[in-house]
Structures are given as structure tokens and as C-alpha cells.
Length: 295
Image (cartoon, rainbow, N blue to C red; front, side):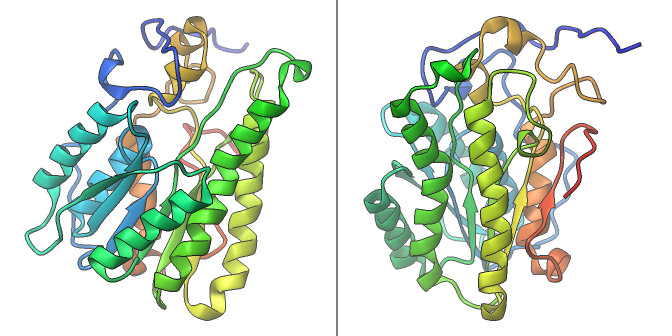
């Protein structure tokens, strides 16, 4: 008999995307106090989209712990408080040899904005060693007929066009030994019993983009991989779902709970480190609470 779903979080929603981490209850956990860094990314320059909160924040934090200089993007006017909190966190975590972290307001759906942020990071730090395409949005709809053209265009421009734009303009600043990590989703592999048809379509595109780009760049010595998280407690959840769905987030995966951002971030560290994953490209890691997928 299938286990009964159990409440995981207090019911809550937020009125707009991207969501705000600082108003969530409980707050997502970006930091694992038991994590032991070992200088895996010393001297590296990392650019992370959507790094102000959620998985992106935890990735930035763990990269800084491992010695990287970190730049990240955020949405101005909505994510300012989360951005400031993340910068404070990174300043405490960074090594003495790394540059100070920077945050850049960016609309990743705009190619012009993507080019500007890439050029700004490369100009300040000289290069880009690690690109993490992470920023994304989602929206619950009950029926396919409810998905509007305007929303679909916004969704694809943010979730997949932005990955293309960031990659396109970063490549000229990336040398052999660099890497690209794309955030996909378990929904790309198993679908969704909820109302995420449009969202999972973008995530499936990201998986294909990751595999194809890996083959394109293998001769340049640039690795391309992905991470496909399961349900994770991030601002995306209350900003895109009804309160009753947020309450039960993660209760239907084998581990019967949602993940925390700090449980996902080490997958990015692994893929970013040539010490750990130099023989991996075109692959996707699956920190998803036990859901079995192929690929």
C-alpha cells in the first residue's frame, strides 16, 4: 500500500516570481555545518545565475568554501534582500586568496543582459572557469488549455533561452579545463502528476542541451554536465504553487521529504572540480530523494 502523504511545511504562498527566501517558514538551509571543504576550486572563477537564493545560493556558498571567486545574478527589485544576505554569507565563506563575491542584476531572458553580465565578470576577474546555468521559473496550470502564449514565451526565454545566451557569451572567456553545469529537474525524466507540463518541457530541453553541448565542446576541453534535483525547499515552491501543495512538498518521493539546498550543492561542487569529475561530460546527476530514473 502506498504511504499516505504527510505534511512537510506550513502552508504558504508568495504572490510573484521569483520568490523571496527571507520570508519563507522555515528558512531553506543553504549551509551544512558538517561540510568539510578541501580546496577543490582554488583559483577558479564561477558565474552562477539565480545565485541569490535556493539551490543557487547554496552552490555559491559551497563554491566559495572550496576556494572559488563567485559572481552571481539576481532579479533587481524583487531579490535585493536575498542578494544582500547571500553576499554576506559568501564574504564569510570565501578563502583569503579568492576575490570578493559580486552580484549583478540580470534578466537572463534577455541576450543583451546575459552578454553584459558575462563581459562584466570576465573584465573584473579575467576569465570564467565555471558557468552554472540555474535561474528558472515555473507556474502551475490545471489544464493545457490554460497555458497562454505569453507565459510559454516567458518560461522558455528564462529557462532555456537564458542557458543558450549565457553559454554563448561565456565561451570566449572559457579555456580548456573549464566547465558548464546546467540545472535540470527530475520532472524532465518522470513527468509530473501536478500541473507542470510547460515547466518540465523546458527541463527536458535543458537535458538535451547539456548532452549536445557536451559533444560540441569536448574537443575544446570544456566539460558540460547537469544536475536534476527532485523537490527542494526553495523560494520557487511557494512562489509557484498553491499552499496545499507546498504543505506536502516532497512527501511522495521515496525518502518522504523535500531536499534542502545544501543537499544539492555538493553535486555542483563535484561536477565543477576537475579533481573529482575530469572524466565526466554530457552526464546528469540526480539528487532527488530516491526517485529512480534512466539517464
